[in-house]
Image 1 (cartoon, rainbow, N blue to C red):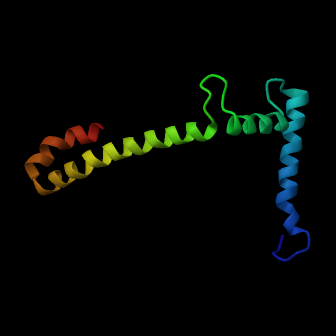
Image 2: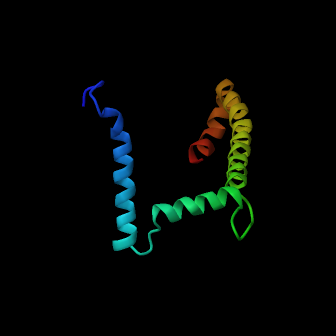
Image 3: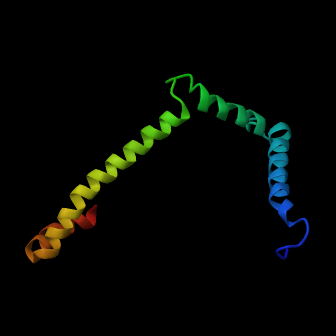
Length: 105
C-alpha cells in the first residue's frame, strides 16, 4: 500500500487484532494447553505487580537480577580479555603460548 493512502494507518491495528483473534481461537478450540490472550495479560500484570508465588519477586526484580548477572559476566570477561589481548599483541612469545587456549575458548 502506498504511503498516504486512506486506511493505511489501520493496517497495524488490524494485524494485531487478527493475531489476537487467531490466538484466542487456537487456545479455546484447538490447543487446550495454550492460554488465551486475556489469561496471558492477567498473568503478566500479576507478575509485574505482586510477583510470582514461589520466590515472591516481581518481573522487574527478576529482570534486574538477570541483567546484573550479564553485566558482571561481561565485566569479568572484558577485564581478562583486554589485557590478555594487549599482551598477546605486543609479544610474539605470549601470542604463541596463549593463542591455543584463546582459540579453544
